[in-house]
Length: 483
Image (cartoon, rainbow, N blue to C red; front, side, top):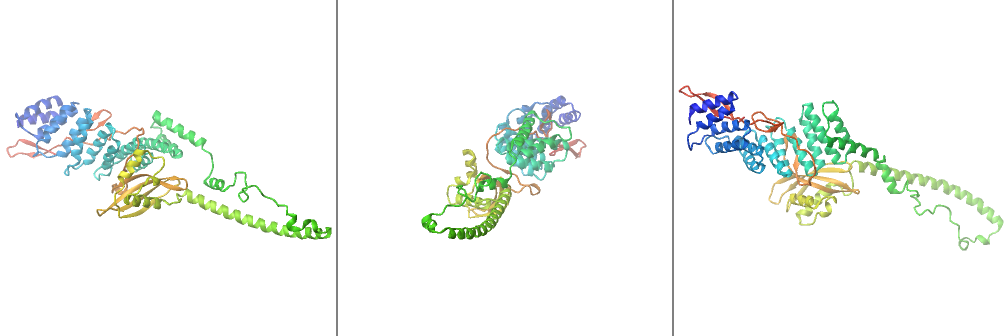
């Protein structure tokens, strides 16, 4: 190494004279020499100058110096350079390498960039996995950005309900009001896609409440559509629906559905009506009035009691329906799903009717073969959507947790999605599964100190340098550190 040229290049870099820094650093290496220190700093200079292809080459050369170390930071920077150069497929390989470096102290940075790379090539499933890993990294100081990106992937896959949960969790981890406004706008779009009009209008209202945030044209259209849907929705309750099903309000007496109410004329052959005298008829009429009065009072009491029972049952059924109960219960459906699959049976009748063939295949691909035990740990119930956390004992030993989403069909439940559940940050859960494409904008990654990313056209990067002392002969040295 030409120490004098290296120090001159480093000084020029610190002074912001990047062009001079590049010239000095290119002279610092001897022909055929490998130096991670020089190439790392050279890559940083080239990134700042916008020469992304050459920066990727410099970071790659630095990776060739195994004695230098910092493979995670170098691979992460190289992946970002390739991503900025419009080569997302190559970026995926480099960023994946960065995430596998056990000594890399900030893998969430590489995971976020990896999610961006997968998003650029249209693989939103893998992008979602990367964003989820970034969000649950305990070293990530602000997981809300990754969670928002995760919500965008769910929207792209047509999984609006999962997007809602990702955005709601992002709100929990966000603090700046400006970023919350943007997340509320995304949440409003997810609610609108899930046909949850009230929540959509409320979320859009939060996004614009302080007057500092303006909705996009697409969001404004979703807001207007949500308001129109609310205005056109009939104002009927669940109790009304149950009473209508029982016959009330249909124009027919539910106690006499054939419309044959009233007294029947007796048959003369059975009563001897034409053989009795007038006096006997008067006596019989008087006795009949007493009997009819008695029967009328008794019948009215019976009718009122019966009507009360019907109303109580209808109210109980409506309450159960509103609170997410049905038949079969969610627990029964989930247990049948895993046990039927474990025995090699067909689970099609347990899946939601609205699923596409690809979505059905995604679900069956996630289910474990030969499971020996299924335990439903808990169920989150609502009127039309529910979810269950399930622990499955695998055939090879050990246990695996799954998150099962269900939708109501009739009075029962069908499985809408199954995802593998992993431990998450602060007890939160985030899951990744299959799905369909939809449309939504993925947010940009928030800039992190010392690392390259694209935010409003500006670049940042992992510089990896700090002063650590001097040599015995008094010449200054530097050692690469991960920024």
